[in-house]
Amino acid sequence: QKEVEQNSGPLSVPEGAIASLNCTYSDRGSQSFFWYRQYSGKSPELIMFIYSNGDKEDGRFTAQLNKASQYVSLLIRDSQPSDSATYLCAVNSPTGGGYNKLIFGAGTRLAVHP
Amino acid sequence: NAGVTQTPKFQVLKTGQSMTLQCAQDMNHNSMYWYRQDPGMGLRLIYYSASEGTTDKGEVPNGYNVSRLNKREFSLRLESAAPSQTSVYFCASSEVGGGGKVTQYFGPGTRLTVL
Image (cartoon, rainbow over all chains, first blue to last red; front, side):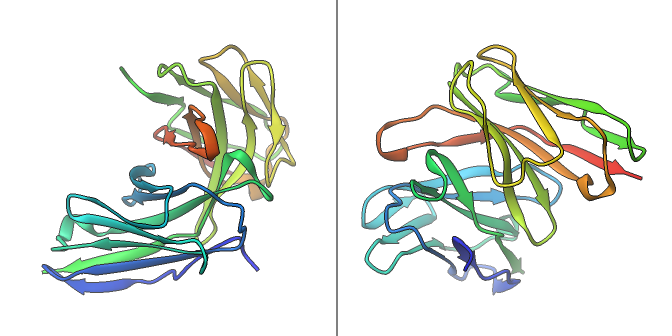
């Protein structure tokens, strides 16, 4: 079982809709959770981090964390074609990686069509 | 403030050749990392350096060596390149807060092809 799992997609949503990206992780000791956006041919760019159960909002982005279910999600409201990218979920993994290392999922490709 | 810089941006090697990928950061971060990214595989950690003077293996260290030259610089060396090392290589750096609050910032990447 992979330590951080994401659906590879593509997730296709119409412009203006809500895109919902999901991620599950295996290490119950994980404490820090990150979402990176990666445009084709570019490097990953941090867009959200969340440390506590519940929701965290930043502009059009909302990260949701449920540690009991080992589940983290990213919602993108009012999706724009410029949001089309691969979204990487990353988790610190004290058991598998140590406190200062992250385990990355393979990413979900999001396509927002006009 | 350049963040994390990497050189070269592109490189083509023949099997058996050696090369060093350079990485530098100007954010005064203690920790630095080298990843490779292959299609469908996500980012895999090759080596990391928690602080100046220390290095540790990650998930896929075979065929690579690293040097943490000083707090700013962290290099990755391929001693004898193999086609399986064709990949995109990213360097990253982070400061480490309590509870694993390890926000990592990435360089632009090096696209390496081994023929």
